[in-house]
Length: 51
Image 1 (cartoon, helix red, strand yellow):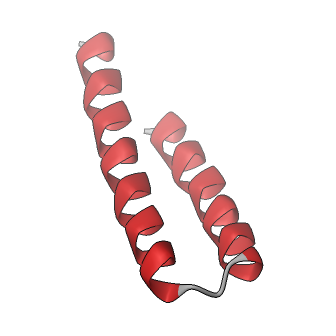
Image 2: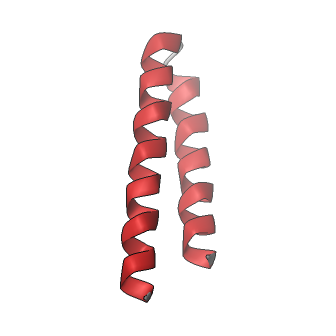
């Protein structure tokens, strides 16, 4: 659970940085969606490894 929290933290920092760099909201929305899916996939794999 700690690892997932760290991934989430890093993701939020990346999103903030990306948002400051790029004002295009549609592109930002797609990036956000992709990041969320990526985090979910990583989380599912992490759970399988732990079990």
